[in-house]
Image (tube, rainbow, N blue to C red):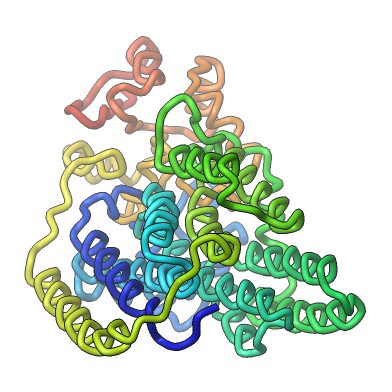
Length: 465
């Protein structure tokens, strides 16, 4: 493996600059309603100097215990919000840039330019579907550094550097994906034992690293409960009703499918030869992405780094003194461009208008006294309702609402007229807000005592007579 800053540094800076520019000015990063309630939760925690532990937003589960696993990310988001939506853009642009830079550096310092470029581009495009202003994006740089450190340890046939442990407490307080990081370390530990000539020594060294990593993941406000939370979340049956937790749609061409086909082509052409443990690990990553669309980002970040050592055997990187000389200048130029882009982002206003997560016009037409009564809302609108001080029936905090309520909600929007009628009566619902094309809208149109109060191209509001 080539040592020194070149040729990976210049390549990494270019990738980071591109990721920063795209994320800083992409309107799509705000296309998720979760952003709204994450900021509101962070504001509450900053104002009260404490971690939220009960629900303060909804009316259906108000006061129930709420496991705010992402409390640190939400606090950082609330701080960024003090600069408005441009501040949110810049926060997540920085996270995207760090992620892209680490992945690009880890691949390019091992692999020749063309295959490195293909691997990084194909990998990072798998992340574009998750390029949203939510805590998982803030955790991706840690995933990239963690994976790169583990891969380097495997190349050197040593245990991971102990400084990697410092990432785990930060990661565990940012996002539940820290559990995947621990699992990845466990998988590479098994690989180390499988391939090592001194298996006992490898087991002891990697085992010690894993033990300390798990212990450091307990350094959260929730302790053992925080460590177990990701497992409980993935075990919830109601998660199957949530879009990002559903299987990847393989009937349409997507960046993930293109990357998968390219990987398969390399393997069939004999250009990519993997040892059995690494192949199994890669297949598990692909399986996770196929079962749950949200896990495509794990493939996008981890797969290029995991494959880099194998790619380097057929297309190794070559140190070039010209890269050594040019890297400092390019680093200066990249930093200057990022600073210019950041200033431009802060100066340009971000206009939030009606979209799939923001029924702004429809909600503005609902009288204030009606807003204060129980509502039945679209799942994706919950964040915007919280943003505006309206207590939703449901929002994206699936773990808080639980399997029973999630299953009932899935029946309501199916739509099941009986489930809808029972829910309206049980919760004394007085108004609803759903997307215009939602099937439940027609059921509400035909339901006695209900009428359309307002409609536009995005949403429809019904009010009980």
